[in-house]
Length: 358
Ligand SMILES: Cc1ncc(COP(=O)(O)O)c(C=O)c1O
Image (cartoon, rainbow, N blue to C red; front, side, top):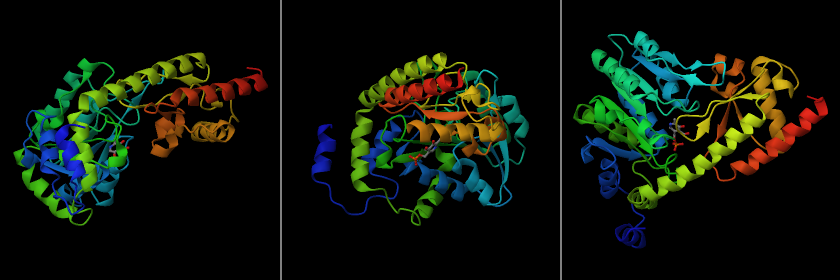
């Protein structure tokens, strides 16, 4: 801990904090961006930030375009409010890879579109647009003058550092960037995230601050001091977390090539999740009950968790037909014990293929 954070920690009073966040923390958040001033930041739990921004921005009937499948509240709040929600769906390849086609995004935009919601690096696929696609997307938003809510929770976790995109808030003045400490910084228990905007969105932030009186009023003050210390040590924290991710990515790669008759896998471009698929979902890759399709990957994951205690998240939880039908599942890359989990899976899959003779 730097000396100032340590002094704050040691003299901490457990009274209410500031609605928009501890000022020193807000200053530190501004350093992550080129165009953001303290008036453009509000601190909250990341999920709370999504909820408050959507509540502040949207009215029944508004048109919204959202990346899909994805983190549920990114589309569900708009839907629950009675908005017209168009889903910008991922394209899934035979090889287990995924991509988002910006031309499809542009085709969904209307002159009346109120909001585009995007999430790159993307949960669950790990897709990251390239710089040209990103600027194409931003220009399309500018052309219809819609707000752009950019969920950047997995930003800073690019496996190739030059692939990092500029934050939406730095390239578009009607962007609302969401970020936080839960993913890249590995500190979800702090419950600290933030919204960052530029002056055209200040009225929106004022509304978010009012609505926050109905959720948490202010952040947890111990968490804000710990978040301040974390951001001031961001290089060390990010290095630590990228080391874990890189080691896990290598382990997953070796595992997937050993079981290429069972899985199809393309590594994620960024983030701490990957989204492989079963090679033969209708037959469960030759290691399952053969109950087919969506049931295939769900049944497959259930057998694994019952058989060896390792939980893979079946794509069916995303309610997205194509990824369910292709047998996609999500695997987390962020924990140090992933190699041990892969070892258990390896033993289990070997025992199954031994027993089926394949
Ligand atoms: C894409 C995305 N956005 C937002 C969140 C919310 O973060 P938190 O759980 O820290 O509130 C998550 C959490 O999984 C996420 O995956």
